[in-house]
Image 1 (spheres, one colour):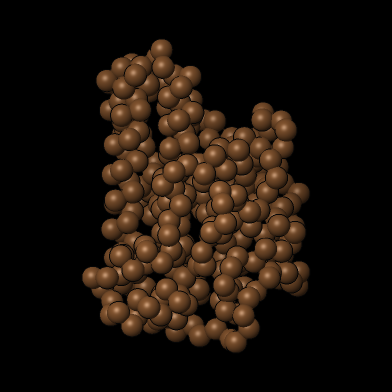
Image 2: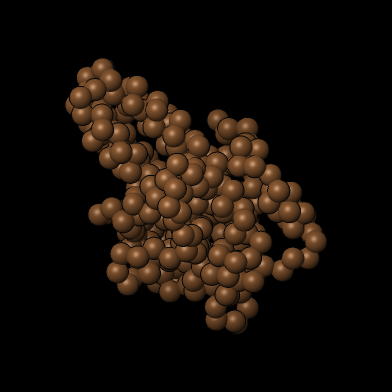
Length: 291
């Protein structure tokens, strides 16, 4: 997903921050190392090996076990980002130009971290290439949709479900490039990015206000992060765990890689996508927040 020149464009603003966050040190999760560590207390060595080589679903690891591991990861990341957010709130109003962008990038970085962990647990392929710091368009697209799920957009839920369904039908060794960059899913990615750009501006303003009062601002900023990050992570976990890709009973066919042309068959998703394509970003409907 290419960045536009106009930073005032909500879609471009969101994409720029997401890209910057994805390049921060420590944000990218090594899939093999994470799965080995996270599953060590719950699975046999053979199950872990199969989960790494193929997927946790193919290894027969139940969603119940994966949910426990996911909850541990969510608690860890929530505590970490909340503490760092509180620390970033301490400088006060005179440091706002420096601390607010850093805090937003830091917050998004932790969202990228938990998105990767949940994706790997629920049988998504590696989101990042091992080659350099570049982030390809397919990765930007799927992360945008994951963030959309976190923020409760129905269109993102539908798009993530469609991508997962495509991968569940075949052995997916990487993200479906064409579906996320050229197919009918791509317009939804753009709409979700525009919506998130607007929401990001609102949250940035709230964080700016909270930092205006030193020390008190630190507590408010950390509390605001805790109140938003935790339910968003849980929302993504709930959605990913409900998809066929995470189902241990699924056994994919023998194709090697899905390269992702989305079939426009006129079904419910195609209809929903057509409606979304003609809607403004501001019209993206929100789900009722999960408790």
